[in-house]
Each structure stands twice: as C-alpha cells, then as structure tokens.
Length: 254
Image (cartoon, rainbow, N blue to C red; front, side, top):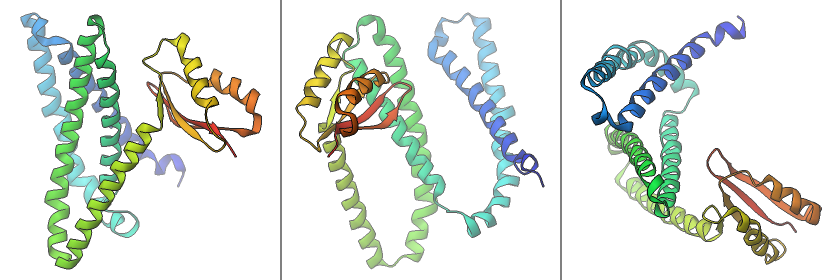
C-alpha cells in the first residue's frame, strides 16, 4: 500500500479541520469587529450563516467522528498510544494562550489611545479562547479521569499524588519567577536604544552567565555582531522564534 493511500484519511480530516477552523475564525473576526454597526440585512445574513455553519457543518462533523473515527481508534490507543495524550495537547494550548494573553496585556499597559481599542479586543478574544479550552479541559478531567482515580487508586496513593501535585506546582511557580528575573525585555524600548541596553547586560555577564532576551523581531543582526567578537564563546539558543515574540538565551559560554 502506498504512503499516499495510507495517509489519505488523515489528509482528508486535516483539510476538513482547517476548513472548519478557518470558517469559524472568519465569523469570529466579523463579530469581533462589531456586529452592532452592521445594517439589518447584513446582520441577518451573518447570523443565519453562523448558525447554519454550526448546525450544518461543525456539529455533524463532531457527530461523525464520535460514531466512526473514535470507535476505530479506541483499540489502537489501548495497544499503541497514550490515553492522556490529548490532555497534554490541551496543556500545550493553555500555555500558548497564556503567553499570548501576557504579551497582549503587557502591550496594552503602555498603548496609546489609537491602539488601545484593538488591543483590548484582542485580549478579550484570547481570554475567551482560553476560557473555552479550560472549561472543556476541566470537564474532561472531572468527568473521565477523576472517577477512575476514585475507583482504582487507594486512599494512601491518592494522598501521595496530591502531595506530588502540590510540590510540582510550587516548583513550576519558582521556575517561572526565576525565568522572569532572568529575562531582558526590550520590546518597550525605542529601537535605537535596544542594542545599547543589550550590550550593557551582555558585557556585564561573567563567563558561563546568560540571560533571556525578549524581543519583537529576530535579533539575528545582534548575533552576527556578537559572534564576530566572541567567536566560539558565544551562547545563542532560540527558545521562541516568532511570529510575534522572540526569546533567545544568550550568554558567554565556558
């Protein structure tokens, strides 16, 4: 069997997913732009299109997957996969939305009147996206996983799990605080001032020291300047590469 044939189902589903997501995004953007400003005829057209899309496309897609795809996947997941893998994807997107919200909130703090409205709308949309995902994530944990814990995990082991959860949460919070203290945020600075601030921080580093540069574009020109001076001693590691935020671990390698 050819690769094209074996991937035909996945390709078709991915294409349909993208089509559904793009359509929903189009409706969301139009509503976000202000439906109260539309004339009556355009408002009716938009609302009819939106509700028709939900009832005629999105919900039938979900129903079809429940009746056909998921039952076919159940035995495969039991044998080859991880039953909690989808929860990890949820966490990935919760992290992505949280970072986006943090970036927008930071921009909103110093925004002028001209950009404040657009940023506020962007923040509201990001919060709604996070809230929707988080609601579903909590429901999955409480309706699927916690009953299994109650049925199959002893009281002593449940206490141990609870203690481990608390310990991990506190540890992650400490790592976050350390990461924020380690960051050099330059996006609020005029472009003409950024290199001076970055070089001052970099030149003050001891050998083996580093920090995380947070910028709104790829600081590649800075890399070429530093690599010419420090050659094999430069530490330069991309932690996040756009499209809106770049984070680079930069330092003096030992």
